[in-house]
Length: 222
Ligand SMILES: O=C([O-])CC(=O)C(=O)O
Ligand SMILES: [Mg+2]
Image 1: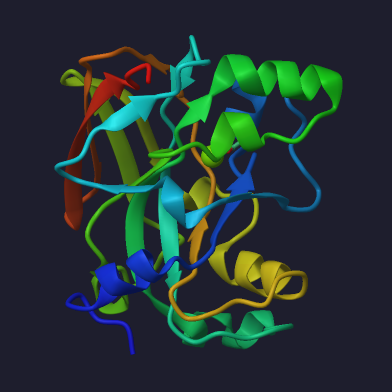
Image 2 (image 1 turned 60 degrees about the vertical axis):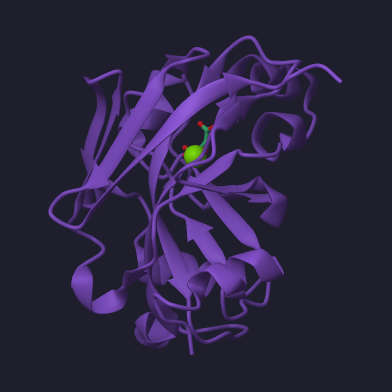
């Protein structure tokens, strides 16, 4: 069973990070993307995790690193083809997450029809908060996420604006990728994404539940 005490072990063991894109209409629109009729999925490797105390590293090939604040869902019980009706029984809890995105690289990938791996899956591209037990968020469809850069509010959005709900996403994903204990689902970002620079300080929170902060550094050349 996953608890606050042992969650870091699950993350060290390296479970999957499954990300949902364009799950808020206002964010899809701000990047001139259509609102999807089916969830848009991509993956990050477990090496993308970073926890408070370690910096977010801008990849050497990136000139436009964006923050995306997202609600993360931690899977407690795995499954394949999970019905929506019982999807929440598979949730151990939550984590506040950032889907750090090399936006300039993503734009090139999009224009060439290439995968987003370089834009989304680099080391430290998934800052995460402490584990949030399920009881602390009784309704994941109605919490407010926020993100500040150097004390300036950049993103503030409620999960009631998600195109596809958490149970819908769990059911949909598990029909394609078997979910396992410790997997993390990033559920998409509300509008307000913007660039961060070296030495910036990012702070993010889920109202009344958790806050976290990260510094941005540029990756040293080897
Ligand atoms: O890069 C994007 O815009 C897609 C995405 O991750 C999101 O909507 O959260
Ligand atoms: Mg995202």
